[in-house]
Image: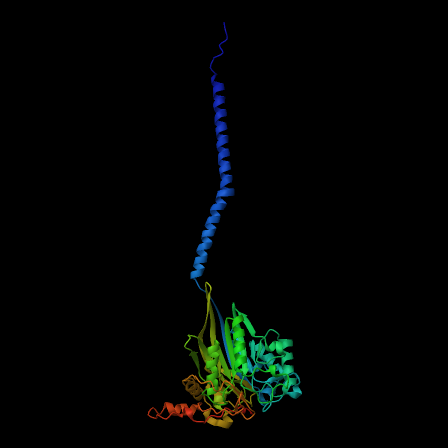
Amino acid sequence: MKNNHNTPLNFKEKSNSKISFIASCAALLLLILLFNQIDYNMIRKPAQDAVKAAEAARQKEEEAARTPVVSTASVIAVGDNLYHTSLLESGQNESGTWNYDHIYANVLDEIQAADIAMIDQETVLTTDHDSISSYPSFATPVEVADAVIKAGFNVIESATNHIDDYGYDFMKQTFDFWETNYPDVPVLGIHKNQEDANTIKTLKVNGITIAFLDYTYGTNNSGAGEGNEFMISIFDKDQVAADIQKAKQISDCIIFVAHWGAEDETMPNEYEKQWASFLLQQGVDVIIGGHPHVLQPYGRISDDKGHSAVIFYSLGNFVSTQQELPELLGGMASFTIQKTVLGDNTTIEILTPEVKPLVMHYNHDAGEYGPYMLEDYTEELASRHSVRDLIGDEFTLDNLKAKYKEIMSMNVKPSTNTNLLNVRFDWEGNMIDKTTGEIVEDTESIHWWEYYEQLNSPNDNTDNSDEDNYDDSSYDDDSY
């Protein structure tokens, strides 16, 4: 019988064949799935993620372009830190040490809450306790400066009429002290060398760069000597304009400190108002004034180009032992600098400017010295104030509040004149034209009481603003 080569595969062989085929298909499918997953993880998913990330970044960029970035810096400023004899003596301890921390104890919270705290250090400093002095020529122990920094002040204003009371040597002591002990604290208005005089002082706070300038109308003496004219910043139209333009290039905001005005006069004079208008035109954001030893009004000024500035004409005294109620009523200026960045545009606003009234308290018998916020001052403290030995019942809490309200209610009319922008002051306080050398008369300024006379005489058509009745003297009535 012949073998049949076409005999069908038996069942087992057929089954094995099917299993092999299925296994091959499954392996192939697994490979396909594996390669697909590898392709997804290594190629397609990263590509998709990149597209999503790019889209998210685009949306975020568009959102950022529509959403402003806002940052703020808070600022306070006070007036003259002027140490008379009793204040100097209050810092001497029996142990032989000197300390003035007690002077600022009642206002620490307000000072330390601010990002920037400015003070007008009216006088030069000395390390020699045998050389300290009060009126008429001031030299203040360096321990006062230590107390000022410890209290929280971090910007020192020094362009004042008293800064050259003792000439170059004491000014050098002042520079050396600040540079050695507090090198990061900007000291304004006085300069150790020409390079320092050419440098604009700045601070950067919360992403806001603030530039500071400080000028005085003049000094009581002849400066720091020939060849050292750069040491004191004295008002000069061209130099002020150049410094402001330089400050604009490196800052977001400019604060200008001005030592100007007439002493014991609560109404800003023509010199102040003309310079205020000039500073506004140059692009200053905030103007902080001092020297009159009394408060003057504050507010906003603006020009026809849409620029505005906040101005505090005078903050009066911060620390002193002067002897009139208005001289003991000072002010703490406060405001917030807000920087807004939207795309390529940056804007600066000065928000919530105000002057919070201060009272300089002293009781010689009890050894109490130091300013209070008026809101914290009491009638009991007022009744113990040593100034009552001189002016009696005039010094009361109600009268302090009334005087503050009276001063701040005055409306200061801006000036468009320019005849006082090119003057210097001689030793008698006369304004001298820098070009002609002739005395320049102030025919525009009025006293505060004349302001109220005009205000209370609505039927009086007489314009008293042209009367030559204003003596912008540099004499200091601060001998107490």
